Structure formats: structure tokens, C-alpha cells
Length: 300
Image 1: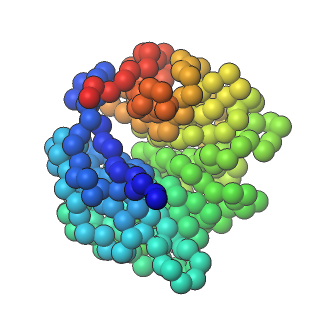
Image 2 (image 1 turned 90 degrees about the horizontal axis):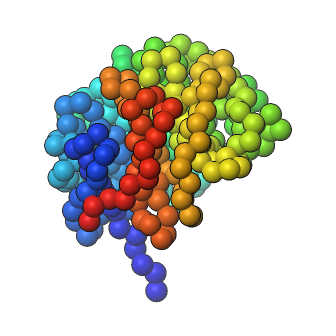
């Protein structure tokens, strides 16, 4: 007998200082990604699941899945009312392939975007104003019209496994990270784009990383990634030419860090993770990730 995973959602109205669990329908499956923008529009996605909210995640409703059970592993709502989600097809015939869906009404209705034939599976997505979106996995796809049309990008040296997280900042520089083990003596490399994601190249990360976990590009001209280091989780500021600074995060038994988000407007960052013993944990920074609060548990 197997137990079906159910989706969990948490919301904060205090810039991450405190969190409360949000009630979801029991039919909601496991969630993979969430994105919110300033008007209060939020979208959460997962395996055959698309949820939307117009009150900053306090309440949610299910939206029709245009691709019949695809695994939507990433979502971005950088330019409301437009939201974009990407992932992997659920077809029982043939090899899995990448899929993209777009909503132009704040997540209420979705349509499948046509992609080039044999698009590889997609795991990560980020959109930035004006109109730039990058989705990646075993390959890289770029849109310059907010997800309406997509074209592949060549990656020199290829992608050894897959890009699990990607972030794009306001000037059009995008950075992608691979959550697999570091494979270079110089450190775990990361993918960097030129302006408007016209081309991509690999850059060396800092030494001592075991693997990357997530990346966000809330700050102009730089991105912030969270990684597992030899002494625990760390936060690394990444630029187009290489890593700029890093800071260790407070350790917790069995901790697994899953996500990071930063705001250019407030210079605040939030890291989310958890462990079997403590459940979901959250941590905040008000100084571009240079100093952090202790881990906080959610309020039930």
C-alpha cells in the first residue's frame, strides 16, 4: 500500500519573521514550486497541480491543467497578470519531454505553449522584466516575449546532468545551478548568461561545495545561491564573472535547504528548508544575505 503525498503551503505577512500553514484541499498533490508578485498574485505547481491565489497565498483555488498530469516543477509570475510554468510531460508513450504552460489572467486559465520537437525535460524557470524568461533542465530554452514563444540556446560543453534552479535579474543576466554533486576540483560550476540570455557559459564556483540547492536573482546585477558546503549550508553571491562573497548558515540536525528568495526593493532574503525531526524551517536576512536570523519553525 502506498500513501499519496499531499501538498503543504505556508504564508508569512511579516516579511518572513513568522509563518503559518495554509489550509489546502485534501485532493491537492505534492507541490514543487511557488511564485508571487507585488499585486498579491501567487501560483503554486506540482504533479498535475496548478493552484492560484490573489491574496498573497492566504487562500488558494485549483486551476485546470492544460497538459493532463504533467509535472510542473517550476513557475514564475514576474509580470502579472502573466505567469509561466514549465516541467515534464506525463505521456505514457515515448520519452518524457519538456512542457511549458502560460496564463495571462493571473493564473485562472492556462494554455500549453508550443515547443520545438524533442525539447528535453525542464526543471527550472525564471522570468524577469521586460519579457525575458529562461527555462532549463537537460537543455536551455529562452523566451523574450514573456513566455509566448521559445527557442533553444547552445551551452558550450553541454550539461552533464541537469539544471535544477535558474534565476534572472532585471538587466537580463541569468544564472543556473545544478543540484548534483560537485564534479570539479575548482568547485561546483554554475551556468551564466550574457545580457538577455543570448548566450551561456560555465563559471567556477567557490571551493568546498558539495552541491548547489537553489538560486534567486532579486538583486540588480547579481544573484544569490544557497548550497551545501563541507561544514553545512552556505549562501553565495554570484556574479557574471564569478562568486563574490559567501556566508555560512546556522546548522540544524538533518537540515535540507530547498529554496531561497531575495527582494531587490527591501534587500531581504528568505531561505526555506526542513528536516524530519523539526518539519519546515525558515530563516531571514535583511542585509543581502550577509547575516541571518536563527531558523524558525512555522506556527501550526
